[in-house]
Length: 444
View 1 (cartoon, rainbow, N blue to C red):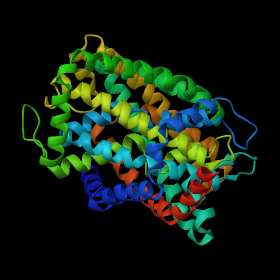
View 2 (cartoon, rainbow, N blue to C red):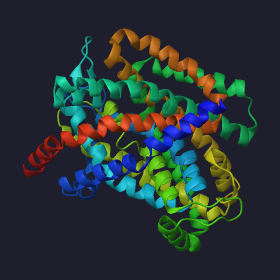
View 3 (cartoon, helix red, strand yellow):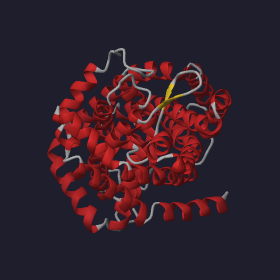
View 4 (tube, one colour):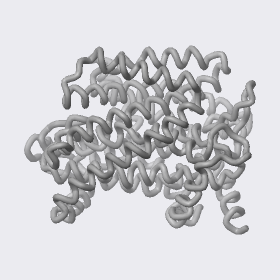
């Protein structure tokens, strides 16, 4: 296992090196400028569309636009918001949070473009269901001679799903529950596996229904708990923001159990964990938005970009503030355990909110990513692979509960980077299409 971990560490360093990080940010900046900052200017309009999208109209698709966003959020609002933020701070220092913000600010344009292209270039399978995502807008948008690139995305996505969407989630739930309540491994594995099977065997419609209920409720509870703790320490908030901004450009000196981090470490872990959390640039959320009951790519793109806003600029920021205000960020702890300790230090019942929130968030992430991986597998092998893939997905959950956090995070990082590259190439190549349909929509 040690040799495999070293290989993954080397691969992660290469994949998440300067080239990929710069590409993620530059594509987001390029799309933001090309869209004339519409993702920033149209946030109120997007929330209005989201409210209207609760009820499906007679448009083509599988689930209402609201459920499409909740399915996408179910896959993004998870351990990245709790364990991922804690890991970013533990490895990159407080400055990593600034780079998470930057990634999210420009990632809104990336997510907008992904969803708009997913709706525009989606297709129907043998059973008449709507399917889409980067593999389809690569093949249908760039032409069949680029189908190999779409195939690469599907291959990476199919494998990555087991890391980012299954093993990492199961592992983080286990860490949280054992820290908070000492629940045995076997019980965690049994309950999580059973609940997952009940939902994913019902397909995207059941996933959308469950996500549209669980995500808003749990996000509201988690946000309320974080705001309560921040309110108790409100006088210290300006100093925390100053700490984040200063460390983003100057690095963080060794203090307490924190080993110190350079400016590059802040950028690397901030961007990597930011992408892990909101998935802007990975192309994964486009798979869910392609199933939306809509005939308007721009409208679904506006709804989709709210995923980044809610996930990173709201939930991740609140998590980071609680961790930094608690004073335990430099304790040497990392992952979900650091978040649990921070919330517990800020409020006696805070640790339970995190533990329960992590369980629900991770469970919904398992549901959302099961659909992503399934659609990638279907693109490569056809509908006959769907049931075997779902069964394999269910079997992998108990394995994740016994895994080592470091190894699983490294595996997820590598797979995320491999997914991003084909998608970013397609977004740049198809950006004229995104700009054209956007101008047409807002000029009418």
